[in-house]
Length: 417
Image (cartoon, rainbow, N blue to C red; front, side, top):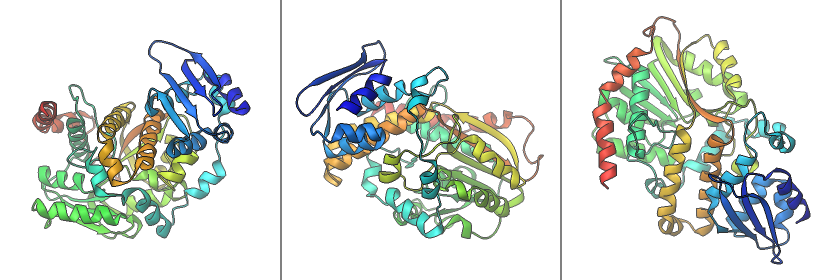
């Protein structure tokens, strides 16, 4: 406990953490403060404190999953919030920089997503039981940052608003052919066809997502115009008037960024428009923490904006618009977390209690990255020509007005439930 005690005394100042070791001895860190979590945990064996001290994210995550770290006051969201707030990304927070150690070389190796490995990495997370995602996602199965526009208060309405926001930025015209890179369960593809008449091809590396996307699209009578293929985006051929990619870029891997944007440039029609929606970092280049890389997103990495832009420049495309969504994903993950906790018995029936603890630790850590660390979402609009879109952003709001009644109706429906 010596090393962990030194570590916690060094950086936990705001909020109170009480730790009880395997012998029953209590340690107190920080102090109670309005608005900050008050958490008590118990460590059930003598080896866990050392593992946590040597690698806090991996050691704590595995201990919580295994039941060796038991939360006796608060929950895992409170615990992760308390720890990460004290290590928050702020210039004045010297504790963060004294403790921050990133395994950059290991992360670089982990991100080398050659095609065979990319498919395996996707399957690790997205080929889980479909029923799991139905327990906490919205009806569109949007497993990415929602858009909490003014007046939007429910997850259903926020995801509908996100889809409308993306459709508006794509500025779709009659007869447009759209490529959806990393199409998930097909919700965006179906939305674009339903509201604009566009023909959409979605590509994915997840066999489970592909099966669901095809079946649900056929059920809704769209199979003639909305198609899905199990293919790596690098193998797609043809040209598309619009290209969209939501929540997929995080899985591309830093060594493949140039190929990714050159592929978009190759597939985009001369007067085409592309939109990339991704998690990014405001705090500069980093590395995926080892617990997340091991258990949740092998090969995944959320890049700094400074790591994205040079590859767009080299692809000879214009950045025609870029929007930063700061706390939108934190609000989205909060909603997912609350729904998972409410459906705990069903999740444990699908898997087991260890899986439930892993899943809630993942959501708590992901949320903390947006409220305490330097994570954000960005939407980057791209074109080959500088004049294919209006010169001001007014057209986005004008198009969104047409979707507003449905967004509002979804908010009312969800509230009524």
